[in-house]
Image 1 (cartoon, rainbow over the protein chains, first blue to last red):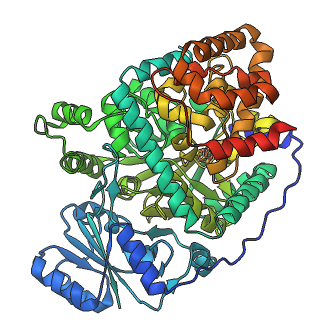
Image 2 (image 1 turned 60 degrees about the vertical axis):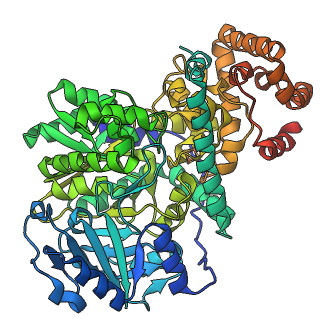
Image 3 (image 1 turned 135 degrees about the vertical axis):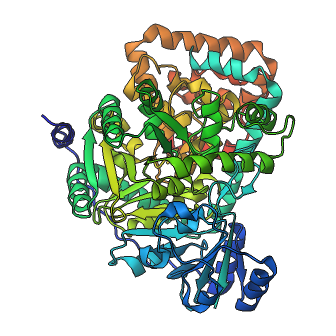
Amino acid sequence: MSSREKILSAIRSLTLEAKVLPEIPNFSNSGDLVERFTQAISGNKGEVLSKGEFEEWFSAAGFSKVISLSAQFSELATLSLPEDPHALKTLEVAILEGQFGVAENGAIWLEDTQLGLRALPFATEHLVIVLDRNLLEDTMHQGYEKIAATHSGFGLFLAGPSKTADIEQSLVIGAQGAKSLRVVLV
Amino acid sequence: MTHPESAAEFLKDSQKAKWHDETLWFVRDKRDKVSKGIPEWEQLRELASSIKDNVLANLADYLEEFERNATKNGIIVHWATDSEAHNKLVLEILQKQDCTAVVKSKSILTEECHLNSYLEKHSVEVVDTDLGERIVQFLKQPPSHIVLPAIHLKKGEISELFHEKLHTEKGNEDPTYLTQAARVHLREKFFAAKVAITGVNFGIAETGEFVVCTNEGNADMGVHLAQVHIACMGIEKILPRRKDLGVFLRLLARSATGQPITNYNSHFRNPSPGKEIHIILVDNGRTAQLAREKFRNSLKCIRCGACMNTCPIYRRSGGFSYNSTVPGPIGSILSPGLDLKKHSSLPFASTLCGSCTDVCPVKINIHEQLYEWRQEVTKTQGDFAKGLSMKLANGIFKSPLAYKISGSLMRNALKSLPNSLIYHPLNIWGKNRNLPDAPKESFQQWYRKNRS
Ligand code: SF4
């Protein structure tokens, strides 16, 4: 008997009482979506910026290796998307467009179409996500409602920069992935 | 060594033990605060618990549905009855790729299977890429906590270790500095690895996708740079529908560390063009646990670690004292199912205060199952259980402090609780500091429920 058959028949040999799969109520919270989203992102150690604030930060920093997949900021790119993700090793900034955000926790949904390369939001040193302020959902339930039927080859709820507290529980931003997250609400 | 003996070892460094206790309590406290911000918190726990009940009642069907959909998406599905079969499958995939160095993100399942030592025996270098896991790997230790693998270490020890392994400045204990050094080291490994291994938080039957959650982004750094992704998943990790993730992702990080969500929640449905995703569905004792009616719902566990952070015994005895891959209250009901003789002292490593049950996001009746395991141990190893009882009696009456603190608790308990509760090795925890004070409320709840 194969491992597969062994496992499945071991389970099927048991008499297991039937249990109903519950429906999930459409929970919603009160409060202004933009305000809650902004608070959540800063709690996750990211930052929410206006278009102007972002442009100011960007030009002051003077980056030389920038990939932008955002139509609104395409002129900021200095590099085009490579074919091999290993070429992202020294990338300074990636600018992406988020599909929608979730107010309760700051999570932003991205899929292959927004990412170009799946490694992009992780390998880059700084990550910028451009998000339409009208595309905020209340909780994760509405978030999943929205993507219920889409086939995402790779999809990601991203809520902040790479972080760790593995050394004596001291929070450090910039573990293995992106060292910062800036969300530009437009 | 039994749990009380190892716990006594841990308590020898009293300063560190105190720090450990307080730090985990702090994490528990963050969990309380953030959960209070969600009005429907209790409803979510109830939902999560019922969804998992449904999963366990239909596990074979869901596994087949998952396999069917994942295969349709181009994911290669494997099955492993035990750790040996699992390890062999991983090695075969690596050998096919001529891969001799692999990066691995946090996976308690691969710890359970002792994958690292198996691969190393076959000349494959394994690099654990979660910072805490890398630290304990350097020390040739297992993780001492399922969410906070290096919680038993102080920054001075990590600084010394990194000085030796990563050539950081001697004496520099700054966590930011040390983390940056690890970042540079690990990024080299990510960019060089052909194959990346991850665990799985949730597998979705309806879509055939699976979800991996991290804060560091290390799982994604590994898999998106590698040619081949191997995901190792316990068969109980299935959820029926994509929308069930809404419930579980709202609970997981809040319960684990008190944050509203992990920063990276990656959904893998099909491989990138030209790449491969393998998923290994592992039993390793899970179907046996499913067959034990009293212990079945321990399989609902989503490995958030909340029961450890809140447990007065775990906080004061350290993860290693359990000598089990999953330590703490949940480990103490999972591990006896794998090897009752080896883990027979674990069901006694509890005050049965019920705090674990109170915080568990999937509402596992942990403390009741601990009680049930005590009955099993007593049945099969009467003398051993008696030995533990003696330790308790000695300690309680010899240590005035322990007696005072636990006095009223014990007085009530002596009147109306079963022997196995009275005879727990309290003396060990009372050894050099007081007994648990916080879970008063939960104890009362438990007491009320069980008095009759
Ligand atoms: S038993 Fe419950 S509280 Fe403990 S790790 Fe599992 S899910 Fe978390």
